[in-house]
Each structure stands twice: as C-alpha cells, then as structure tokens.
Length: 90
Image (cartoon, rainbow, N blue to C red; front, side):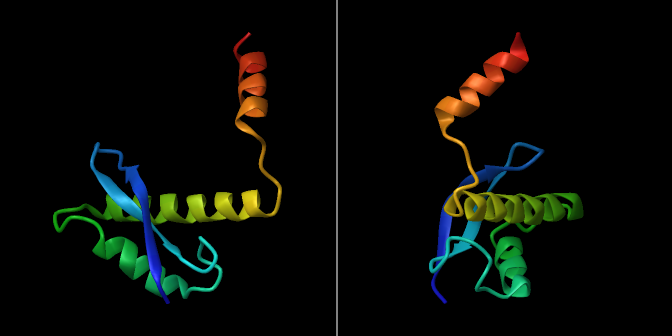
C-alpha cells in the first residue's frame, strides 16, 4: 500500500513529525492500525519520549478521523467556522 506524508504536525515540545495516510483513502480505513502506528513511530526522532509517541499517534488518528468526516460531508466551511468563532468571542 502506497503511503503519503502530509504537512508536519507540531509536537508539544515544538518538534514536528509528518502525518501518515493511506493513498487510497487519505486515512486509516484500509490500512492495518499496527502498520500505521509503526510508520508514525518510525517518522519520529530517536530521542523522542513516550509521551511524544502517544501524542503523535493521537494526532494522526484525529486528523484521519477529521478527514473522513469531511469526505462524508460532515465538515463545515472555513467561512462558517469563522462565523461561529466570532459569536463565541463576543
């Protein structure tokens, strides 16, 4: 299965790591979760902490789920998001 690396996601300590997705779906749906976890971990520096590994896996899963929701039409446009944010900030 061909893999894609996206833009880098920021870690809590300021370092970055690439998000990894299946080329077929853009997410984890058709890919073994264990393989995804291995690839995320392999993309991190050797001196990474366990907390950073867990955070990288969490971020990758959340991005994948978010992209799936957008493909299913569950997302909102940037304009709508800005309108909602403006209401909250009043």
